[in-house]
Length: 375
Length: 150
Image (cartoon, rainbow over all chains, first blue to last red; front, side):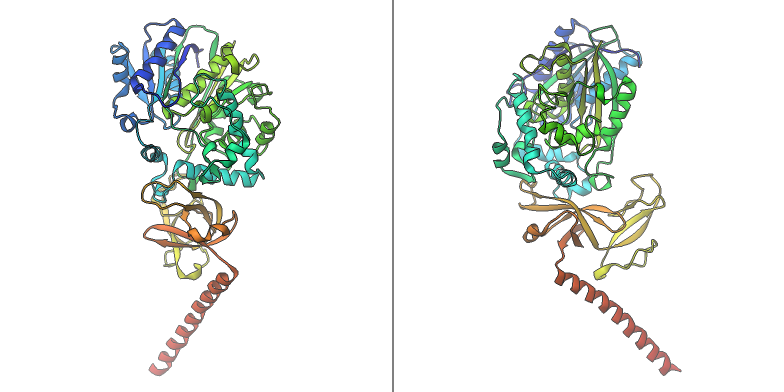
């Protein structure tokens, strides 16, 4: 792939916001364009999961281009469920690599809090295999089935797993854009109500609004897109080979590392998809950042904390930063760019040169890995 | 039931089997599917014994509309490596364990699992024996008829 650089990034505050979807996308996009010093991108790629149902907006790409005053700019929207933001980043890179554009604006977002929670849960459950949905399976239900299998396979107790949201809330408390900016304790997690046994409320990401944006260019800048990879797996949980790892992440990681010409040992900061916090450990293992069953040791030793050897989810992750579904995959990439440029403020990791973002679509059926480097 | 089984799997315990489909590559799915989810090849109908093992489970406390809480859902694996989601009985929740043997029943296209105590296992065994006795009796009856004809 020809060299592609991240020229600028932007991100709105995440949380329960008043602004409509287009205004959120606009805020992130304007920030990224200013940051990049670009006024007229050749292409706009939008990533959203389901604006048709969340807000009633259709054909969001031209709708947004027009809102931005760029109705003449080529624009399209992509969707891979909860990883749509990472998919949009990939699509823009592919367009630049193929020579269709030299500079692309990628923007991804979701507005979810306008609907009551049961309705949001119903829309999210469309990512589940129809046969399994007939059993009342929700995303938390399937995540709980995976979590129980993982915890049993590697002898983890509830306290081990509860350390993940405690760490991620600690990071979120240092992120002015995070949905939750308060620290929590192990007792808070273990005392919160059961959503889908063994998953408790504080182990499940919130429903959020928000948007993120990036400007990509073929011209040389500080942060380079070193590796991109995608992996697909059966939507149905019953067709999966393993319940304690996600093949879609493993495939995406292998492809991204091969393109970047580096291995997991080079990674110095990672943003991983912790919509259900036990997944943080599974993801680290699938990415090769820890051996199978050993990610918990890195967590409990503090290696994945902000000041550790390999900080994971310095932004607070999906758990504390929040999870506007379409936005998250791109918001992770924005965080990695800030970390590589040394602009992450109170949550800055010490001088990283290689960062990785991993995004999960659905119950890990369409996953992405993006590797960025500072040359 | 059982007549379509082409795989040589043992006769279903308890008398009711689970309709499934089998591919030449070894993949088995239930409910039956027209194409193999692994290789895309054609699948042939099969019937599997209605006994399996809990691979993992959850008790869902915030189920979607149309379902009552708490809702037990398990991923169960049958002998022959077919996996599917199953509903459980609320009053058996305390007995759920990963690796536990369960009996499967299908009602209106939905699978239900129940854990088996020692007494229930013995009942199941006797039912199988009952089947065998039934067969023996049938053989005797037909032999009797044949001797009368001759």
